[in-house]
Image 1 (cartoon, rainbow, N blue to C red):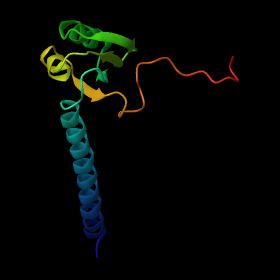
Image 2: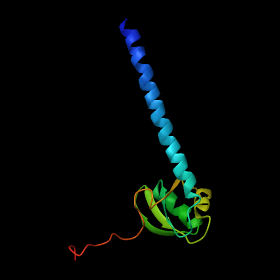
Image 3: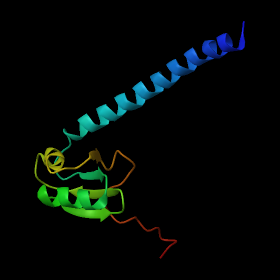
Image 4: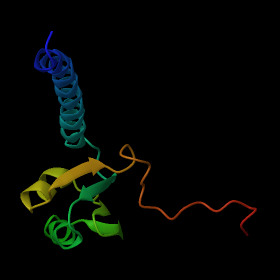
Length: 115
């Protein structure tokens, strides 16, 4: 085999592996985003995107801001349809904050050793 033939032979499996990984990641993300629409009212949501855009979307969706930094803002609303209103107001990505990484929007618990 020539060098070119060997490179093509190795590139094919690597391309398939990369494609499979991308398929799994995007599939997982689609499922997670779809599940947020079924979240119960009163749950904390993580709005991913620029802070100014997330804050504006939360205000338009009648939510309460719990925590915010440059790219993730945690918000909550007791009204049904909060996730749909966030997307309609311009939110880029909305995830269930508790499932997305333990972000409940509550202050961290202190242990008795810290007191």
